[in-house]
Length: 114
Length: 115
Image (cartoon, rainbow over all chains, first blue to last red; front, side, top):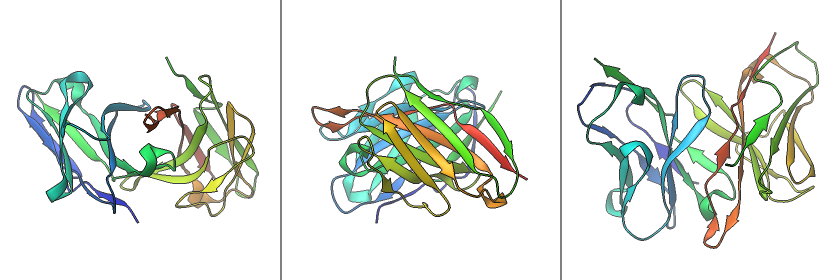
């Protein structure tokens, strides 16, 4: 069965500092990987996704993620965070691109310090 | 833009009541999903459907059923609501693309409280 681990429940970062959110997955074949963001009171919004090809993927809002098969990781990064990035971030893995549903991590709550 | 709407943002029901949560998408997507979101647990898949009148169990289907009579509408049914079903319920849909299924688009969620 597939699974996703987000080791950090909370992360606090100063505004303007760099950010890395960790995600490790377990999946038997080539995974389809996603990062979603959920702002307070909002639905989930896709930041980026990886299906195949270049292992460094660019997303919206200045985020990027790198797929590392050898480490079973798909970490999310941003060079300089803004106060508006404070939100809950979810990593997810899906078979067949998610046609059978996605398996989500438990989420990382990002706090931005002024 | 894809739009996924859910019938209610907030819902309060009593134990034992039958509860219907409705989800509608406007982009002719084949696949639709119901998740529940609980603090510290992330999102967990309840049921999904890849076609009209078709349904598949997800990871936590117990206590729930679904209905998909039309392509755009996917309903989640709690036959007899219980307090442990108090949660945020999220609906999603996705389209089959050239390379397989694409991004899942989520609705705003229904926060259900069972008293």
